[in-house]
Length: 55
Image 1 (cartoon, rainbow, N blue to C red):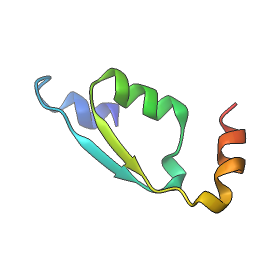
Image 2: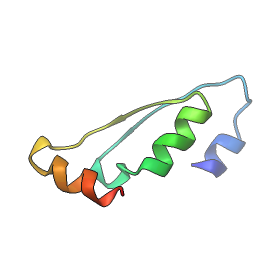
Image 3: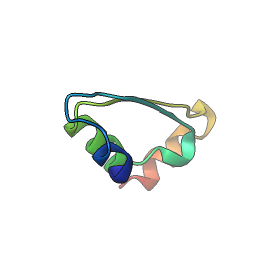
Image 4: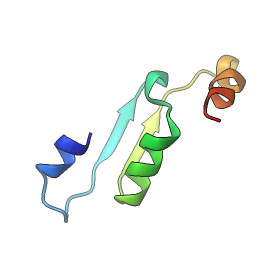
C-alpha cells in the first residue's frame, strides 16, 4: 500500500476495497492518516473473532 501511494501525487485521495483478510487496524489507521477511504467486506458471523484478533 505504501509503495502504491508513494507513486501518486499527494493531492490524490483513493478509496480502497478489500476482503476480510485486510481487516487490520494498522492498515486502516494508515489509510485514515493519509486521508484515504476504504471498504472492507467482513462477514458479521465471524466479526467477534476478527475484532478479538486485533488486540
